[in-house]
Amino acid sequence: MQLTQNNLLRNIPPVDRLLEEPAVANLILQTSRPFVVSLLRKVLNSLRQSLSSGIAQDSDTASFTASILEALQSEFERWTTPALRKVINCTGVLLHTNFGRAPLGRRALEHLASVAGNYSNLEFDLDRGTRGRRDVFADRLLKELLSCEQAVVVNNCAAALFLALNTLAEGAEVLISRGELIEIGDSFRIPDILRKSGAVLKEVGTTNKTRLSDYAEAVTERTRLILRVHPSNFRIVGFSSRPALEELIQFACEKPIPLVEDLGSGCLMDLQSFGIDDEPDPRASLKSGVPLVCFSGDKLLGGPQAGILAGEADLVQKIRRNPLFRALRVDKLTLSVLESTLISYLKQREAEDIPLGQMLHAPSARIGQRAQAIASQLTLPGSAELRIIDGQSMIGGGCTPDRGIPTRLLALSDRDLSPSRMEARLRSGAPPVLSRLENNCLLLDLRTVFPEDDGLVLEALRRLFTTP
Ligand SMILES: *Cc1c(COP(=O)(O)O)cnc(C)c1O
Image (cartoon, rainbow, N blue to C red; front, side, top):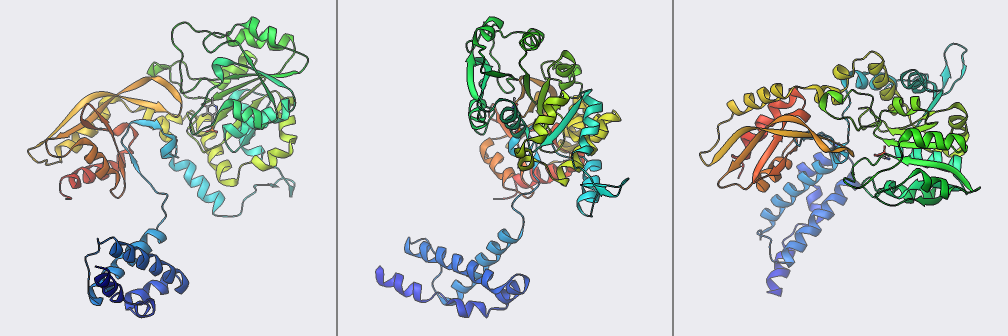
């Protein structure tokens, strides 16, 4: 056994010989010799490993060479095509953190290309011909849209909250209800962020009930801030309550202690027509008198990853002057997309320009027609059954976890191919198609698919039964 293996290993061509192969020379021309040599070594190592575990098929030098070249070619392609790529989201979850949250619209992307693909006035005042500030672009629109005194933009909502806490409460106590000490996902925990900001967490009330009197009892001379957090992806139902926002605002105002509200999603779209009324609107919070709010740019706003801080001028200015602001500031890519997104809101074109708005507003009947069009062009094996059924799309991204939007779903089942096998095959296709499983069926929701991609979904479904 040992002997045969050694013989086999001897039949593997050496790197130098392989480098003379025309196919390899071609790869070197496209990249560099050291890179191709490093790929070749990887391929040879894995071949030796499979030989020693007895799973390699080849035996003579010629067939070794052929399979090495094949493996090298696919390894080369894996390295020279971006691994971060488009997927087709048929899950019906509009804001999926795993899928990059909000997709961006054509207008925003055109503006991005024009700003980022050229020089720009990012920090240049064109009127005066002097150095300018990058803050002005989004802030001007945010002030108008939110009716607030000032606003700043940082990397994401976690950074916004961190910066607010660090600026306003470093070394001092922050009151927060035990019912709001939540984890947002991907181990972003409010208590951890708070601790890292240098603030001292002072828990108030209980998990299910927090009264205004609990806040009153917790206040000391070390209290510098009250934090209110939108519970986002989580609901306590039944015996639970927290003070109304207005009560807490009045309490904070009388003390006076600044109140900061972490809204998470910060929705400027009208969701009432979808029966969703518990998504926090920053305009409403600010109007009620919350001095400072923060929210995400890529959740229900439908824009780029960003964290927006908005509220009273003195608080925002303090935050703006914190040296950490420089470390958490956004680049021209984010600013250009955010500015374009906010202009769409100003023009009340969010349902037209912003993909999230388009998808939210697509009538269920229209989604059903698109599903029907796909179904009618598909020839399936006799073992398969394809139906179009009622279902629910979900907003996701930590929003409104207990309510969906009515939709129509393609529901596919097959006697020979299990739904999880179908899901895996669609996922490994090019482009990957992501679906969900329910009641032993594969479900596809076209609400989260751009209509121009319906053809790609059709092709992926066709391949489902033809690939072995
Ligand atoms: C999502 C969320 C965050 C984090 O937002 P990012 O923009 O992802 O950093 C913070 N707070 C709340 C309440 C959230 O829902």
